[in-house]
Length: 231
Image: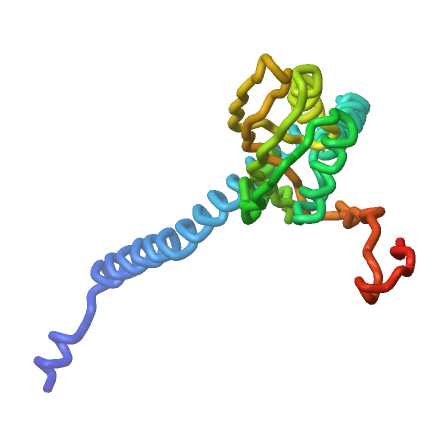
């Protein structure tokens, strides 16, 4: 028993060595769990600091040029509205018929026949990413661009034919002549041919479309009566 007690007895030198080892171990654990966590926090704060500095520079630059941005915004809004005004707000068959009624009335060209085709989608405005350095703003629009193509057969004299081409190309709402054929009869001075014409529209948003009305006689309830046709 005495021998066992002697083996378990720790000398002062060993005690001091054990204390040193424990101190080193505590310091190592403190570094691993404490300093490492602190280092992660420093990295996070550094990233936030960089983001805030970028935002600060962006806001400072905007504030220094505030009036310029206000003026530019008003100018671009005006250009935007002017551009939209070049396009019809709707693309219905009555709108296409109204276009050719006006064409005949203004140019004197006789539209002998026309063939309407389904309206097709050309472009969806959708979402547009902002150039803001913070990348937090996006422009979203439900505006959609459409195209209606109408094939016609026409008849006119030469002067009316030229007026017809000019009228379509300069019409208030965007329109184009995609294909055109013409045959001139020198004996009668009559131009006949076919044309493929496209009408364009931008629909959606706050754009209001008003269906055209036609001032035409609608007939009577009894075609065999002598009653004057109603308006």
